[in-house]
Amino acid sequence: MAVQRVGRPPKPTAAVVAGYVAYAAVGWYLSGLGSALPDLEQDIGERASAYPLLPGAALLVFGLVAVRRHRDAGPSTSHRSVIVAGSVGLGIGVLVTGFTRVAWVSAAGAVGAAVAAAALIRLLPGMFATERPDDTERVMVRGNAWSSLAGITSPLAIGLTIAIGAGWVPGMAVPIVVAAGVVAVSTRRPPPAADAEAVDPTTGDAVPPFATWWREWCVLTTCIVVEFCFSYFAATFLHDELDLSTAAAAAGGAAWGLGMAGGRFVLSVVPAPRSVLPSVAMIAAGFVLLWVPENAALAIVGVGIAGLGASPLYPTRATALLARFPVSPDQGSVRGSIASGTALVLAPAVIAGLRAVSDVRTAFLAVPALLVLLAALARPIPAGTTLPTAPPVTPDPLP
Image 1 (cartoon, helix red, strand yellow):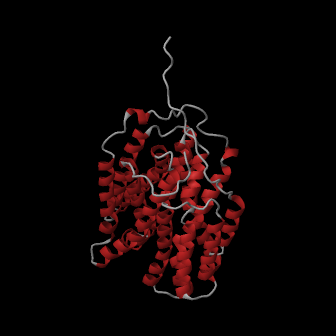
Image 2 (cartoon, rainbow, N blue to C red):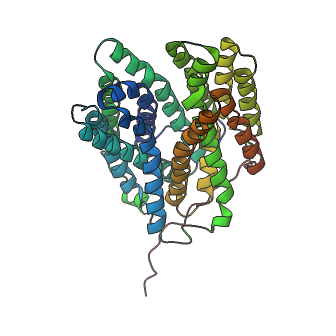
Image 3 (cartoon, rainbow, N blue to C red):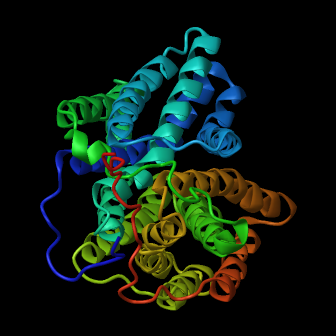
């Protein structure tokens, strides 16, 4: 499985297109939660403040259960069915969440949407590795680019539907429901039988020893925590520390998503850095512009630079983790989902905890500390590294 190629990417298969759309739906949902939260809290009270924590908790539960069962997700047919179910479930969950006249129904919808999003996050990297074993990293980069673009657009769409009096549900749910339809249509044809049997999940060691992949897991987790520190709290910093209005701070915080999306689309056609050091340096430069000058314009530029620097981290390091599971990419994807769940829960807790005892400016100092940890843990990915796939299943010779 080649980590990267140079040049124009091959035409995506229907399953890869479905994966891109599903990633975008998840990005739309995760970013849209923050925009919908004020209205949800107004309708059903402070219990809605727990909704953003549900996807991370669901990821942790999914991952730990899968590790305990030590099962693969199976061949690509299973990938397709779960991705369709997860996409449809996400749309239904969001619609039910909007039924705030009965609080427990809304809460059930929020749990359902979180579970569906977690199922997609848990499965998509393994599906990409199965569908495109020769080009996994670039497909991961492109999928995350669409997710980042959706994450920028979602708050704008939800803000628009709220402004015209339609509420947050149309802005959140309609694109996700459309995405579910696209995913279902894209995957309506099952793969050829030969493709489904290309990898035998029972062959070899599906889960190599922890000592062989702990570093990649820790690096991936740290990368995601850095991402969420900015995506969750950049707007809060701009509002609390630089006195921008709520709307202006939200718009300024979107510079993070613009940097992430732009960087990932570029990196889907050019080689991604093999080392984390360029990303660490660029994020650090953006952090300095945000934290030091106390100038709103420079701070927004800094947020965008940090987003551009962070753009290669998740897809390249998720692929590096998958590389440690050559026989079973789905088992690597399970460990990646645990990393995402840990970060989704840990990042808000770290910043909110530090903010509770100081202020958001001091709390943001967690970012340079995380960058030092990242630089110390991560090793360069060798150029041209290949990730071998398991051999095809062959019948026993005739007697």
